[in-house]
Image (cartoon, rainbow, N blue to C red; front, side, top):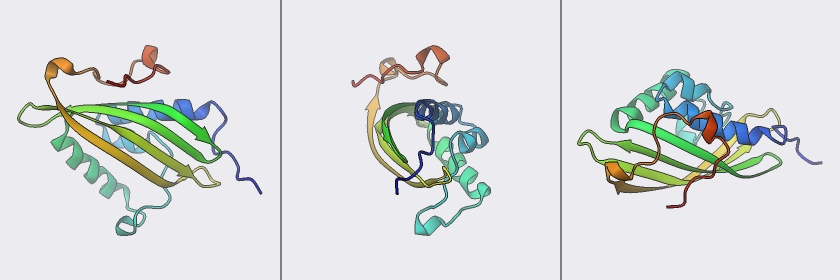
Length: 148
């Protein structure tokens, strides 16, 4: 038996953009609600309550200042979606960083995320080399992320 699609065919494109926009505003509540809820967490975090999730995000955004994220749908089939992402942020010393990589998402028959994996690379950048500023504009949706 084939598993049901968690989204209509075009919905993964919107979903990847929604996650990126939610995280780019560094608003813990909006980020937590930007995508589908995660049903299963690593054993160390079995079904964490929202206060733990927002505490994690608070800690992240206290270190990663002026965080701005872009996600691009790479591929999807059945219950699985792959996205590319890039985000930029600076630390308290003013050093800018770019983090980039790939995420794999797998959804259950109810459309809840059952598994998420990410490979993330980090590099220091000069402020003049930034290319991501604030939430993604509507005019940028669907545009590919630059490779360099």
